[in-house]
Length: 303
Image: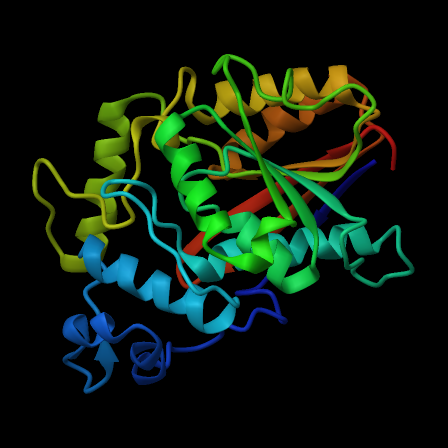
């Protein structure tokens, strides 16, 4: 069964509607004050093309709203925009609600597999805070895994809620990280979208040009990102295609598989692949933040 659900702007329960209260956030992270300025419209803002300013804003949001006492990432690692990541968690919560009397299930009985949790550990942070879910985060890179472990150990509320697993083979996704007899209600993933380092650089140039009107030939990524976070062989088509194929092998161990899709033009291909895989249900959940549009592709062999 196919389903497409329209979304206008942020999820209605997303607490990050409207402009940021920068003075309040700067009370949580005082260093943020140093990068706040008054823009041409007389409004307080930060330079969203400045990776340090973006990192300080995200740190303030996480400490202010999500019960953290510590959060940091190594220089150059992906610093995700919190409102959009919160939207993903809220929408997949609604997806689970379909099987729980239309109420988002909460608590440790809900287990979520986060594919490529990254140094930032963003989805486990949000999911444990919003719904109390338990998480297993997988990662192919040691430094990212080490930083995620430090975030967990530095925040007592995460210690018993989030576990990490190293994926030794970057060519596979679910194999070896899902143990025999194990069940997850949900898997989530923010995949690398680009096909090469050059395409990732071009994408960064476009983002900075949209923010500042021009872009350097060798841009500094405002949201950061290592090679494994930004590009992969075959790009989005290749990665999600492999994810769909592999999901067949663990189809009884995950209730809903979900993944972010950057390009809407890829959806018809993925939907065709899902039909060939024999899924019982598939859904597309549209999301939006400002001018940015993305969507969640979800499928299940069980629901």
